[in-house]
Length: 234
Image (cartoon, rainbow, N blue to C red; front, side, top):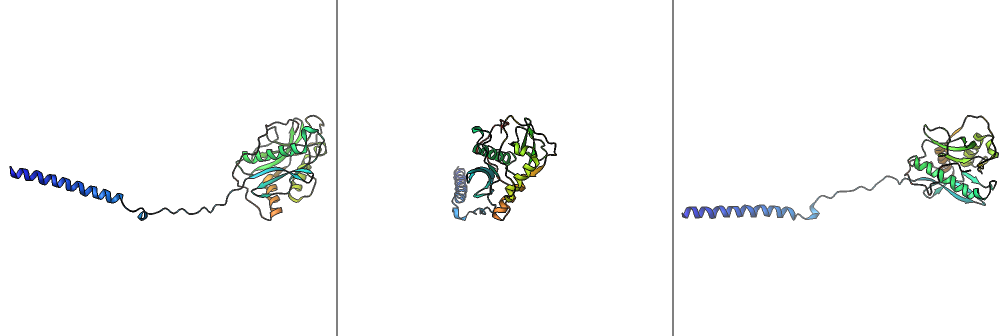
């Protein structure tokens, strides 16, 4: 009987001892000082911040001009707007803002890149126009319309496109300055539409002013406004 009693006491003592030992180990593991744990080292980012290419309408003397912007850098005027030929509805300021927003929208819808964006000529609503295309896209329509040429430029749209390119990059040539009205001339001259690389125009304009060519890989941002597609006389 005594042997059985002492055996129970021994087993109880052993169980309590085991519990205490395990608990002590767990507690010891939980109280490891935080400073002894390995710390993760995060290396600072070395990637340069991407700059979005946008287009803005600014005043240039007594005129309005479309320029390109990357951060705090801007180009010389790419397009000048100075004709009141078509009345108060299509003032130089209104046309300047519309086209600048359309160019910004073109970059945004192209994934924030100038790559593969081209300027070309065509006809929309039976009027000669300059529009932008992307990659395999061909032809002008109401959705990619950039500007409609006036009577001074309508007879030779390709020359008008050249003037836009030459003026934007080197300041030479005659800048494109106006739109056509919604109704009017019907000048037709059969020519093969010319294509100009918009990325090249913009990069060279920045390089011409700042002496270095900047990247065309940009973070997409929505344009300031989103004009509804359609010709509407512009």
